[in-house]
Amino acid sequence: MTARNIDGNALAAQVREELARRAAELTAAGVQPCLAVILVGEDPASAVYVRNKVAACEKAGFRSLRFAFPADVAPEVVFGKLAELNADASVHGILVQLPLPPQFDADQVLEAISPEKDVDGFHAENFGLLLQGRKSFYPCTPWGVMKMLDSENVPIKGAEAVVIGRSNIVGKPMAVMLLARGATVTVCHSQTKDLAFHTRRADIVVAAVGRANFLTGDMIKPGAVVIDVGINRGADGKLCGDVDFASAREVASLITPVPGGVGPMTITMLLANTVESAQRALDARRSV
Image 1 (cartoon, rainbow, N blue to C red):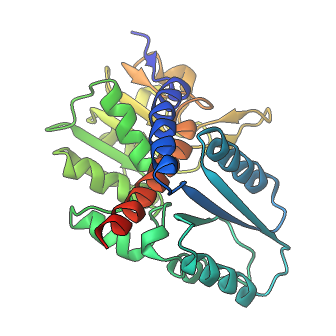
Image 2 (cartoon, rainbow, N blue to C red):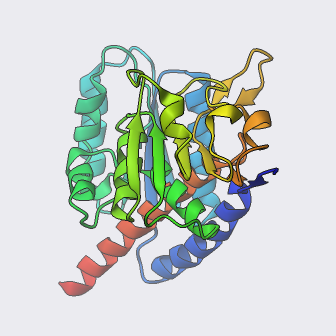
């Protein structure tokens, strides 16, 4: 068996086409979706991520705002900008690119973003709504994964799913989303004693541990669906995921490559949340 790739680039292009159509309709109604991005410091990877997000916004017909601050900026300056953006009715989404310099408490920064403009889905209020199964802004990467599974008609209800990683950004919300769709979910992490015992039983494996080529083919159930969220640099300097792609693809039925898998869908779902926020703003205006 050789796994078939789930093409994140192709799916992202399809979804973004629909989002561009919705953005055009909203703009015609007087509400152009607007995303504001804050970048602190000069981390090269963060700069690339921000550039890609801004470019995706502009291509889809959104308005985009980019605010860059030096690495030694005082936290109160950034908090002041966040307060300004929260109060700006023309801004529908706000994100702060992580990681932040050491003088910042990342949790405090994320909590300073209005939940109504938290298009990354990281605010505690939105995460609480997700846990309760209520409407919220979903964290973009897990939501993108769910879109990928649905695009391939992967059975989720009743499936055994293993999520490797327990971060607030991917692991925990991923587990909640799978659970909400009827999967039996096991969350594994650095303290899990026998990881392979769990992964070999899984119909769906989502690897989000941040270690290059961590999940190997001998740890995967034949025919399983393998989703690789990791982005790492291998010993050869090339991008690779958390999954050893060469060995895993000989066992799995479906697999996401790195690059070209989950990554494009993360930005796409950021756009989707921004469109949703703009739609809410338009609905609120019409109800007055």
